[in-house]
Length: 125
Image (cartoon, rainbow, N blue to C red; front, side, top):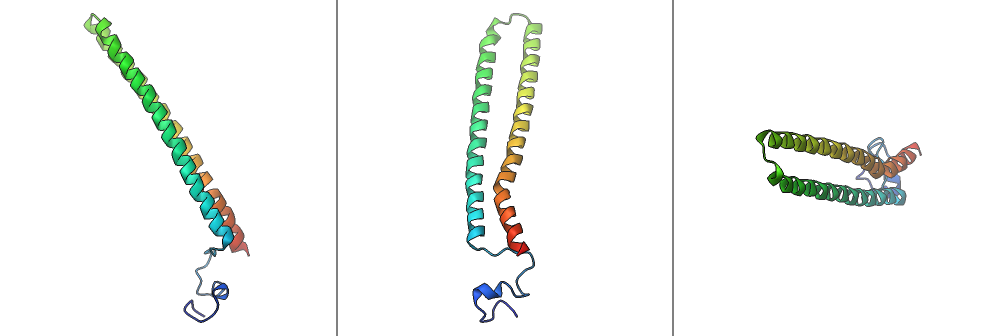
């Protein structure tokens, strides 16, 4: 029997024409998708906050570096200062990228956990 038949909607999802493993969007699945949407928004906010805080810290470090430049009198002092500054910045960016990757992994889990649990329950029926 195919989906275009006059079988009531509640019944056509049980027919062989319904894609295998596709969960029905009943109230539970709809709620799961709404929770996933809430997790998307919450995680996007958390990541934006993290990036803004990091940008503020980097801006402060850049300002402090610019203020320190006039106090350097010898070329080798300038070279050492630049080397230390760049090394510190590279380390900070690498640490921030790791932190954001961890947050992103957690976000993906948070976002899909409810949907996956609900769809597993729906397909088990």
